[in-house]
Image (cartoon, rainbow, N blue to C red; front, side, top):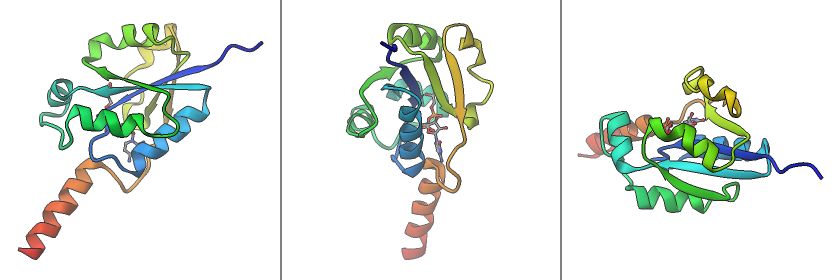
Length: 138
Ligand code: C2G
């Protein structure tokens, strides 16, 4: 019998949008089991220099409810990434191509795949759009 292929991916998934959905759907299609590391609030703050709009419990609940996702955990730091990959038994690490090259150092323990980002949508653009809409209606 062929071994089940386990996929792992990581992200903040704040103001969950189509870019996130499409990343998760395509990641899941590469194997049989998808694990998602959702950035903790403290890690997000360090990574992006601001607190996410949705807190970590809300972001985790949203990601965990997605059909392609089998299990989730909180990602607490970049430094723990190697341990996460090993502990969750991942065969493939998947990230969007904004991270291209950044995780090649894990190719000694798993396959590393960068998928093209969905164009025209991002949490930052959503935040800008909301700010503009509020200004326009003020
Ligand atoms: N993504 C995408 N298309 C978009 C926006 C995001 O494919 N339009 C992908 C990103 O490339 C990433 C995933 O969706 O693979 C999650 O994106 P973010 O929430 O922005 O995650 P990020 O803060 O980049 O966290 O350890 C690495 C990090 O935790 C990644």
